[in-house]
Image (cartoon, rainbow, N blue to C red; front, side):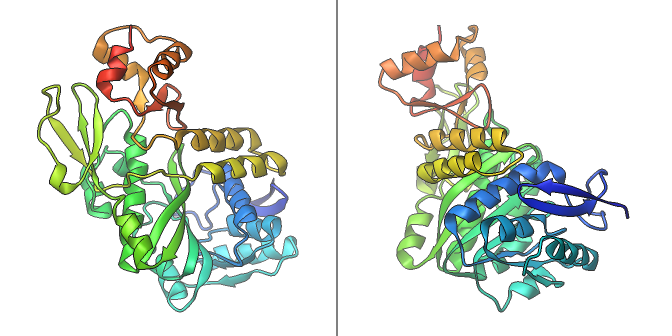
Amino acid sequence: MKYVTVSEGETTLKVPEGRIRSKRDPVFYNPVMEASRDISVAIARILKPKTYCDALAGSGARGIRIAKEAGVEVTLNDLNPLACKLAKENVKTNKLKVHISNESSDHFLSDKKFDFVDIDPFGPPVRYLDSAIKAISKKGFLGVAATDTSGLCGRYPRACKRKYDSTPLRTDYYDELGLRILLGYIARNAVRYDFGVKPIFSHSTNHYMRVYAELNRGRTHVNKTQEKIPFLQHCFKCLDRRYAKLSQLEIKCACGGDLSTAGPLWSGVFADSAFSREIASELMDGEFNTRKETVKLAELISMEQEVEKPYFNLHKLCRVKKVSAPKTVEFASRLKTAGFKIAPTHFNDVGFRSDADSKNLLKFLY
């Protein structure tokens, strides 16, 4: 295999020469994920965990950057001996002290505790979650990535049901539903080990979804978490949507349309607004190649946490009303004047979040 040297942030990395990425690669490194790694570094700088573990490290790019750019004690693990060999070379090049292990993640994590555990697999994170959660200290942080977005977002509902024990829907906000199903699955697994979950930053970008969550052990935290895992009912006729507990599920919408049900899933905020602004500030001030796109992402995510209900697609609403789409600024002004909240969303350029129901939103389209 041929290698090239690249620079990400303040770190120099030896990586496999450019090629189509697949799980069959001798060593996995994805240059498209640099923005994701930039965000991870910014988060590590803010949280300052004492210990950080990348349980599926691949070439070690994420963990090595966190060790060098955030000054955190890092442990890397990967089952692939070639990946571990390359990671050791990169550690030496950057003059770092990083522990590197060549084991299955389940076996490696079975007798260890970390302040921050990250799992970034090629595909679904499902099989790695239990061991990752059990390796968290009494209070710690969990990073989870998922690239099986087609299942989470409703294109393959049987796959989603099988892997995440949740029913998706192919709605106009399918990407947010997918992220909430992922969050709900993480939360449902965490409470089994007496952990409550608080999402601090989550996003859906390109081909993947990313979740960063704070985990706290204890009954109070668990009870709060369980209250945030209901179902979601959606009407494809009027596009209304609402969260509902099992006992609150209905068959018909107020408009007369049939209600479809997704879930269980996460119904709370998917990020902490203040923490998201801290991330944007850290990215702005640091040496990051993806600064422009990641700062914008963090700022958008901060703004949209004011409304927990899934976003609306302005163009889809206009199709229901059979009118041309108004300028977003004009439409937002009408809603605000009427006392409703409205905010942009990182999921979709023509999407917006609002506490108004579809009936009121359609009323303001003219």
